[in-house]
Image (cartoon, rainbow over all chains, first blue to last red; front, side, top):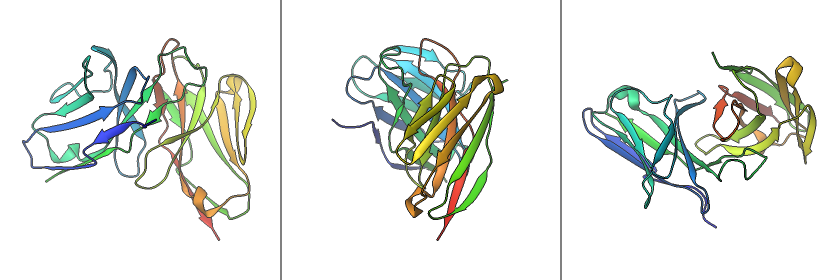
Length: 117
Length: 111
């Protein structure tokens, strides 16, 4: 049973370009979460999605960032016109349908390290 | 606002016991989790407390006191491989699994 998959693992972009980060949740998981982590810092919540629906995007910057989780295919975090401050590790996590587990565990992917030159 | 406070760094000796504390202030509370993250790696789930008391899983235990908005992670018989960052996280609403993370405690282990 494959875990959460993210690609690419490393992504280098120049200022002004677009970055697309992909996340495939664990089999059977219907909920996806995206986090950003700066060096030596914690995980900052960005957005929470289920298939074709954004549940909570309270942590997403208002401009340039968007996320989707289509009916078919992976969840995508898209950053337009990247700036140096977007350089960070972006982690995706998934969980089963809420309420199916009392443990409240999220399963994390390996992350995408974005570097903006 | 939502906040979770934990020490930024803790140092302990191999074979010893260490406790990492976490206090939280959130709009709702539906459980406290702990995650471990090695350098360059992904966070991995360690434990979850929904009710007051101690949960034990091998060398790791986690404690919760809801009246004090406080919890801790206890690591026993420390091994060098336990050197990592440890994050507490709170589930602040019912009905989904969204959690809010603290900034993490970096655990240094000395031989």
